Image 1 (spheres, rainbow, N blue to C red):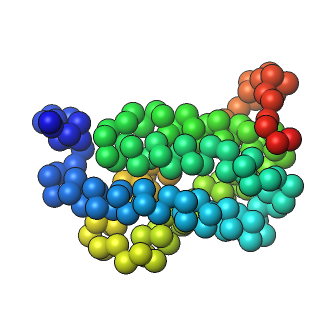
Image 2: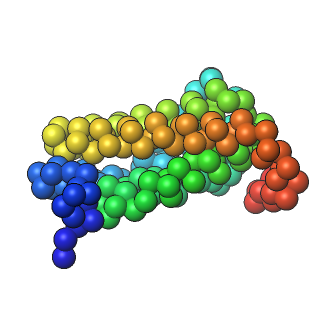
Image 3: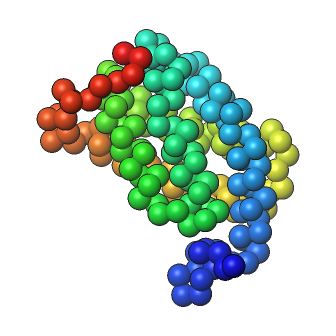
Length: 169
């Protein structure tokens, strides 16, 4: 079976890069819980993000696990990039409802990227594999930040605020 990442004219990665990505994405999947815990700890410890103090962990995490999975699925099986961007948009919108400001919303996603990098470093992932994966992940997180921020700032999204029912709030 041919990987969707290697289907000729639409190829995103070379054969060597796919091999490298496989190693790194496997390492990241294996470390999913540690990465998410590290992210929560980073957000809680960061003085730039004050709004999180009142959020219980399940609400703080909300869409980040889904965003993480969508990013790794994009690398492994060619999942549409729109899926990750949608998760980020929902995250940004929900952060506005949670009382965050725009900088706090962006800071969370920057810490998400840092937690991923930190995990790859902590487990001693091969540099070439980690770099190849993170080059792609960085771009996806950048797009996630933009999608999240756009949803956060969207004045038309205010109409939806009353219809949203947050678990744990």
